[in-house]
Length: 54
Image 1 (cartoon, helix red, strand yellow):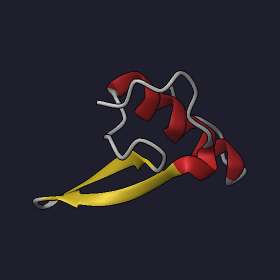
Image 2 (cartoon, rainbow, N blue to C red; image 1 turned 135 degrees about the horizontal axis):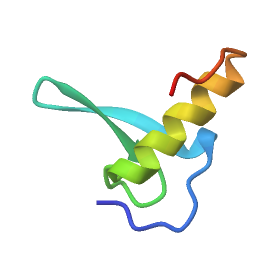
Image 3 (spheres, rainbow, N blue to C red; image 1 turned 180 degrees about the horizontal axis):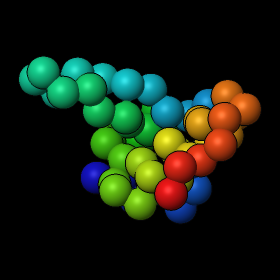
Image 4 (spheres, rainbow, N blue to C red; image 1 turned 60 degrees about the vertical axis):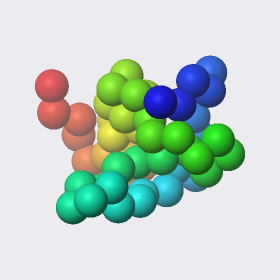
């Protein structure tokens, strides 16, 4: 799991892990943890100009 303190929107790439697409941090190469993935998803949806569903 990625233990980087802050993950920016442009530092995330997607890799296949079997048949699952996993968001990973470009700098360290590890998959994002649940908290980071949730924060990334909210930032991505916000950057698209859509409302975040709670």
